[in-house]
Amino acid sequence: VQLQASGGGLVQAGASLRLSCKFSGRTFSMYPIAWFRQAPGKEREFVAAVRYNAINTHYADSVKGRFTISRDNAEDMVYLQMNDLRPGDTAIYYCAAPSSSDVNYRRTNADEWRYWGRGTLVTVSS
Image (cartoon, rainbow, N blue to C red; front, side, top):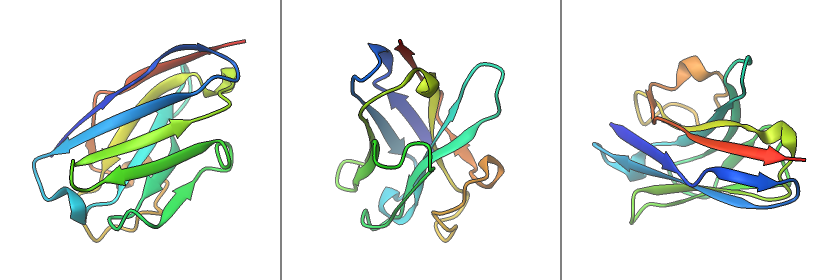
């Protein structure tokens, strides 16, 4: 499994960004996909996840109402639409997939997600 995140950048507070994650190597439509982020000096934290069916989603409280995760199973892509960005959202954002397709998409511990992309940097200035 390979994952490649893209779409990060430098924006001002209140702006929007959309991150993309390209999945390859297995049958994408069977796997839940998650976004995590890691700020300097902090542990990697869960942001959002989407079930294989593209219907069920799960969010960290810190981003609920501002971020939206979605997926296009025909294109093997997952997206993270980030609105009303805040300086506290500054981090490297990673997309992740589990080791098997039957892992619950609501898992928020990074250790439970097996495959990781290289990450994309999001910087939000005040």
